Length: 69
Image (cartoon, rainbow, N blue to C red; front, side, top):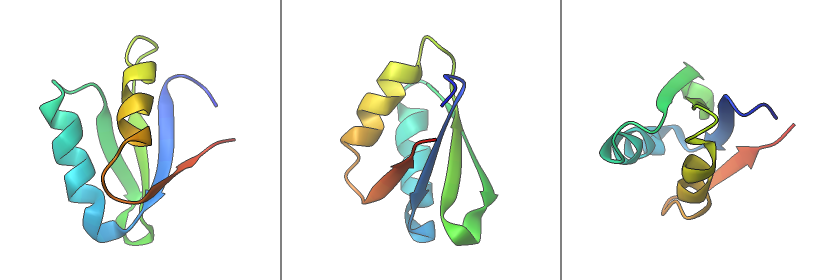
């Protein structure tokens, strides 16, 4: 997996929470949904913010799956 994006899968209704939490961390990533109905989300990060965003995702209070290549 490259260090410029992180892909996750989650319930579509919970995507708004992910977006709000990431925004609350001073925009560590840009959250985008290619197909929001499927629950697949891409977080665009920088190499400097990758580890911080991964730590947030690993402790995320709603169920999600980090999609690893």
